[in-house]
Length: 65
Image 1 (tube, rainbow, N blue to C red):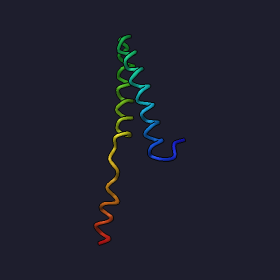
Image 2: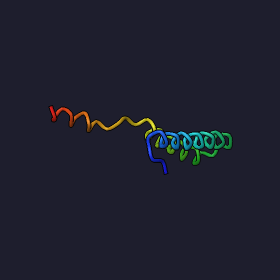
Image 3: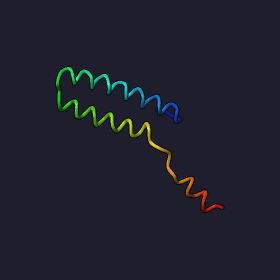
């Protein structure tokens, strides 16, 4: 199991690569249900991969001053 942010990002990039390869194959085969599933999966992985850090720390810093 990944223990730090770099390992998590590597894991997510690996998942993204696999989904993109499977998506290409599904498009060649014209497998519409599979294409929709893989597009949804890709969107979820990208959302995790490119999420912005929570703003909790910044808002807490305002109250500490």
